[in-house]
Length: 65
Image (cartoon, rainbow, N blue to C red; front, side):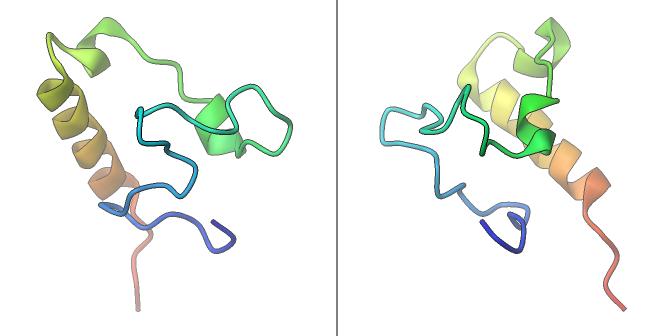
């Protein structure tokens, strides 16, 4: 996504199988390859992981204005 991925917007590289289409490739953005999942991030289920990622996106969203 040339201008970055807004919080809450599905990444264009996320496939129907919920896997990254460019995982391990050089064009993968640094913010993605630098993200190292931890147990606290993933939680016990998909819903917990998505809630954590939503919070992370909100906390790192650039301020507009």
